[in-house]
Structure formats: structure tokens, C-alpha cells
Image 1 (cartoon, rainbow, N blue to C red):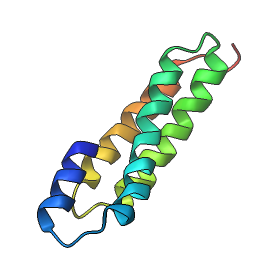
Image 2 (image 1 turned 135 degrees about the horizontal axis):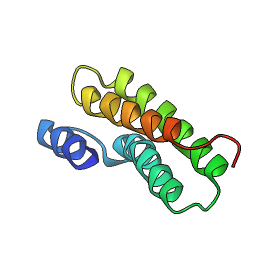
Image 3 (image 1 turned 45 degrees about the vertical axis):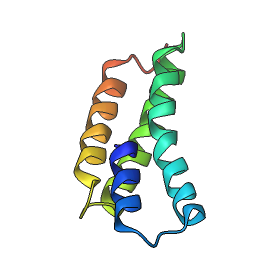
Image 4 (image 1 turned 90 degrees about the horizontal axis):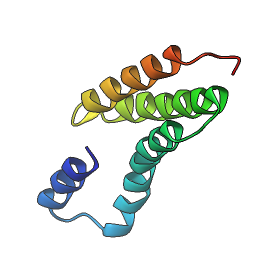
Length: 90
């Protein structure tokens, strides 16, 4: 989704790269947290990372709803589903 966002923004023209970098970085944090959660040994830590990732996905999804937000909302649902599948106490 990050690649789609960058492609859309750069094709519009007239956008400053430094105005795009913070948004692109924010969009990259959620997937990075989800990947880290998949490699964490403790379920409690993985669950926390997935919930944090879901919150970021939902926030970006709402802000970008008119362009690429649906994909982020779906990613948030998937992250919450993964967090729900983990045991909270381990």
C-alpha cells in the first residue's frame, strides 16, 4: 500500500518529497510492527505489537479513506484478528 500511495502522490505532480516522507514513514511503521510481532517469542509482547499496529492501520485508514484507506482498514482488522488469536497471559 505504501508503494501505491507513493505512486499516486508522485503522479499528481507538484508534491515536495519532504512533505511526503513523514506520511510514508508513518505508513511503514504498522507493517514493521506486525512483522516484528510474528518473530517475538512471548505471546503477550506479540499481542501488544499487533494491537499497536492495528491502531496505526485504523488511524491511517480513516485519514486516507478517500484514496487508499480501505486497504489500511482491512490490514487493521487482520492485525486485530491475529492479536485475538494469541493468548493474553503468555
